[in-house]
Image (cartoon, rainbow, N blue to C red):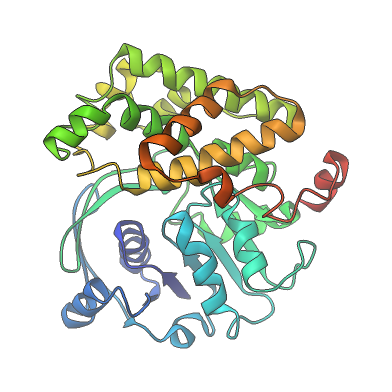
Length: 359
């Protein structure tokens, strides 16, 4: 079975290692502006891992030839930050064939729809099955060329939805040996909202902005950056997220509850659950506010929630306040960029009833 992995960052290398270690033929792609890891993987003929995943796994190919990676692949994983999804889709478009399966991992609030739009398929077209997970299955960091440290692989609580959702169980069946705990979501709206990074990262970044700037990130992001005050802000955002899900008819699991299920946390408590959670230990803060915890989780995640909430008549005053403050802090108009909204995803023209049928 051939597995294509798009992306050579932390997550891409973890997915590639895990599948290769299980005996699959893994082919990796990244764009030419990101040569470091694919070159190292080619030189080493594979990826080394330490931590919860250990050993060496052979990678059949790593490079910039996307046709070689996509052609004939049984599953294609698009693994990267939210801003990578559309370029991956556009690069894949000439080579995808009917019946192939693509999993955007993680979806980062609508990534499956973004990918489908990028390859030029109508939302109702099922000639190529696009799916997305709500989060990355690993806590992982690159430790050097072709080497990763996996501090945690999820033990439960990984949602997946296909687009359309009638194919979700088919995709699950393809992934069960590597991700036996994977759970079918109702649809991609559930996976989009279950993404908890916008609940966690913006609150920590904002309330530690001074410390982050002074120390250039020389502190432990979760252990030292989260207090009961930070936890209260996270909880307020989470309540608004859950309310949006309820209005859409999808269940959004409170993040501390999900954190316990996934094995990141031992107590389902906002604040303490994160700062003392074994899955968050040792994670350094980013070196500046100019990072994906802000640009992605505010500009994509929180904005998506705020815009969906507005269209549904769900109040999101805390989410909106955080966005507005970051617009000033970063001198960047995330609202004007409209990275992820119902309009930019092409969903605004449908009623809730129609979305139920389409998704």
